[in-house]
Each structure stands twice: as structure tokens, then as C-alpha cells.
Length: 122
Image (cartoon, rainbow, N blue to C red; front, side):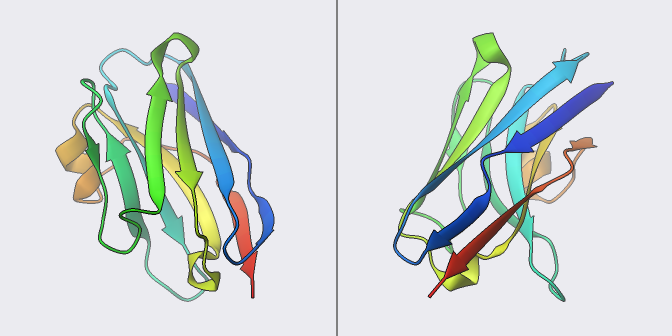
């Protein structure tokens, strides 16, 4: 099994930046892809980025050009650098893992973290 722990959330003003981290532990073999999702109150879970085993990245149009996902395999950690934040980005952000990035893009996840709150004030 895999355990994922997010960190780095907090309160930031619009236009600011925030970097989220997700550390993985346990049996990570086969979990080559990592991704980030977010969920705001009353809204559906939204995909915000994924990175596969060869460091290819995937983003939805809503965050493309503002968010950057990266990973440090030696640390078993994936990052989400969020720039030019908007109030609409306010949500609980979750990291997830899967054996294939395509699954994450489709919203199919094998493991979830507990989430970290990101609040963007205007």
C-alpha cells in the first residue's frame, strides 16, 4: 500500500504563489504516475495536473501556464508549484498516485492523500 501526505497549503493573496508537496511512503512500486486534484465546497473534484514515469506532464486548461507539476524520485515526492493564484483556485488539494498517467487524467486514482487546504484571498 501507498501512503501520501500533502503539505504546503495555506492562505495566499491573489497573484501570489504557493508550492505544494506530496511525499509518498510504503509500497510505491508500480505507482509511476502522480497527480493533483482539487475540490472546492459544493463542487466536483477537478483534475489539476499529472506527471508520469518519464516526467511528461499534463494539465487542464484551467491551470495551464500557471501550475507546474514536478517530482523528485529520490525523495518519492511530487510538487505542485502554483503561480498567479486566483480566488477560484481555493480548494482542498489532494495528491494521488497510479500506475499510468492516463488514469489520473481521467480521474481514476489508486491512492489519495488527506489533502491540504489552499485559500486564495482577493
